[in-house]
Amino acid sequence: MADTINFLRVRRKKLTKTQAQDKKILRVVMIIFGIIVVSASLSSGVFFFFSQRRAALQFAEEQLRSRIVSQESAEKTYVILASKLTALRELLQLRQDRQAAISFFYDRLGPDIILQEIEYDRKTAATPVLNLAIRAPEIFSFEQVKTIATSDEVNQTYPGISSSDITRNADGTYLIRLAVPLGLQQPPSPSDPATLEVPSL
Amino acid sequence: MKPESSLTNQIIRLVTLRRDFMLTLGLLAVGALLVLFVILPQISGILDLSQKVAAAQKIKTNLERKAILLEEINTTPLFAQQESIDAALPSNKPLAELLTILSSEAQSAAVSVTKVNLTPGLISTSSAKIKPSETDTTSPVEGVQPLKIEITILGTFAQVDSFLNRLDAVAPVVLVTNLRLSEQGKDASQLNSSASNFSATLTLDTYYFTRAVASAVEQELPDVSAQDQNLLAEIASFTRSSFVLPTQIIGGGIGDVFGLTQADIENALVQQDVVATTSATKTLGQ
Image 1 (spheres, rainbow over the protein chains, first blue to last red):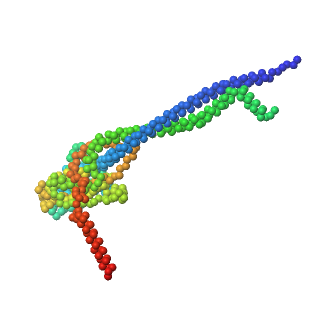
Image 2: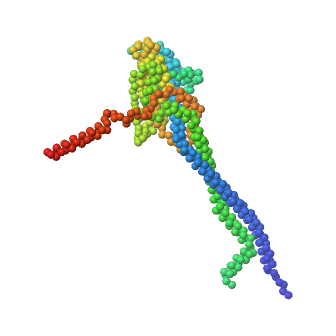
Image 3: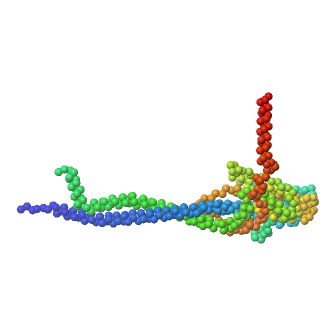
């Protein structure tokens, strides 16, 4: 009697093993798919949130813009006033520097000596120059002017100061011209009388 | 057996026997599609949106701040001092204002103004705007133009000094750019004595605002610092010109400046027509 060989059994065993392996893989893939679905949902949610937020901000921005535009005339006036104030600050600062220099020399020259001519030369914008024509009634006062003009205090406060055109007039008076560069001066100390009082002449 | 039916059978067998495997392939395909067409574009969109939201938030914050400031703008010190600022730095050439204030300050300082010399300043129309490069050379400060005036005053040294001190506290703002002093009919020994009369020739620059100011909605309002508050107080203390711009024409259009009535004009026209007709008739007759 011939033995029967069951080939189907071996095949079914192999198939069952493959199916079990497929199940395992499916389980893993289902987990991954679940993560993908959750991620897609989350990203959609976040995208929707940001879209809504942006739309709300745009709406608020439009409303704020219309509020600002409705006050355009007030804004224009304010901006012009602020620009004017800036210009005034610069003008007054310019005047203050010049006044401080005049006052500095006026305080040191004494009562006999006249600041005969004062010219503010702003041709060089960085260092405007104050030209002073100082007149002394006699030689001793003139010597005093020269001493003051060449003193350490003057040179430290107004570096670059120069004198020129020393003339003796027919009436016996002496004239000396000083060029005082204003952009280079050292900040005056608090005890400096020039900072306390700033007369024009 | 046909080959198609064999293939179909094989597929049916595969689906039947390896259902899980097929499902796995399907899930992987759908997952890949989700990642490629949903998740990745959305992540990119989220990054883009988050940047836009941050920028929009910043703009909104700035606009909110500006809107609040604008609502309270009428109560700011700058607005309160509007008249003082406009008087100190007007937007038009302040010639009449300057002459008025110089006259009153000269009276207060007891000096007499003997000569006034004016220069008109830059002339420009809306169709011929002043170029910035042209203006910058003449003005020490950006956005303003000088109006030059030369005056000669007579007085004692103290009076001249008083006048010059007063010029520092007038509106419109004045800058003395040149000053020449000369004594009148005194010898050198009397220089600077209180009895000496001095002639002072002053070149003054007053200024008017010419800057074209532009403002955008997003642009922040300029700040007024504590230093500016002191400046505002200083400007407010300036003596202002009493000059008032005329705003109405008295008698304009009521009377005829030539003393003619409408009837006179019509009669004159009729007579002119009659004379013309007569002379034409005579010419034709000849």
